[in-house]
Image 1: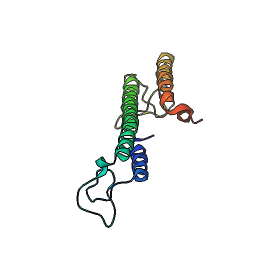
Image 2: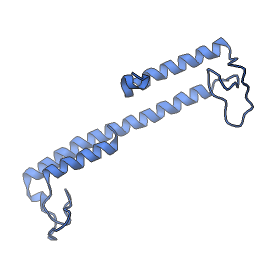
Image 3: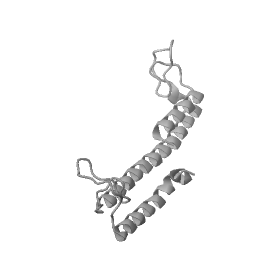
Length: 142
């Protein structure tokens, strides 16, 4: 679940708990008419307990989602870096990697040697296995 979806779920859960009706309510600001005496949610022990429980639950979900995003970004960066380190033949249909923008290219078919193609395959398969941990079979189109 993306952090935005988690925040949306958290806000939905807070609407079930409800606020105190004050314009400065820290739990849920009312829409429309409200009082102005200051938030009274802390005076309701049950509401305070529910809000703190929800905050802890969703904080953990957000931290987990953010850690996953950082891990995924690192994985993509490493994957690209490992592939960029390989030397391709420069053909538009190269199996190893696409030619960099602005480079002179050919159109005769991939001319990379078998060792380079095998190395690219090993790199792609190892990172594919790592990405599968994040996305399941959907990463493979399944």
